[in-house]
Length: 243
Image 1 (cartoon, rainbow, N blue to C red):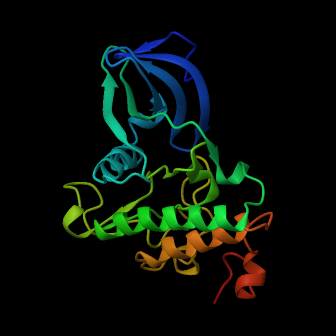
Image 2 (image 1 turned 90 degrees about the vertical axis):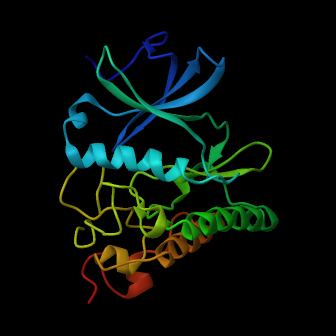
């Protein structure tokens, strides 16, 4: 089956409306929940990835991590499921109308401070629950028209402590020694180089501070910089040649 789903295609009780975007872990569609009559965002795992144990683990981890948190600044997960007749795995989440930070122009100081405050509140809730996001970047922070901020995409989260899920990242960090995963390429660092902490980039053990570092990098960008500070300027070295 093609990985592109045309409007009015039905998966379980969701009817596809339009494609919203795509990333390394799947495509995202606007869909209509025909049972509850509401709009949802449907993240669909490509068929080619469903047989990949690591990618399937990450897909499940994304749903479990975000659904374990109840916070107004964290995306709400409705369900993880499978359209049995098609063998297609999906995550249904709230549909958030708004603009991601990477598509925002330089924000006024008061607005930027409000965004940072909401992101910090969300991260504090996640960290208190033993969840490290590991991919805080402008593309994963969206601002609704009413000013409410939401953190998206827990696909590469690290889960430890009391919130560790059985069989899913149970307190260990299997990617600690890996280097930046871009798209679907394997064997590279997991995260986004421009926003990750040097410890994360070097494959060292990390904790909640890596998200704080990434949040700071986002704040710098949205205070007017066109991108996060270049690694050479930040560390006096190339991205992956730090000593």
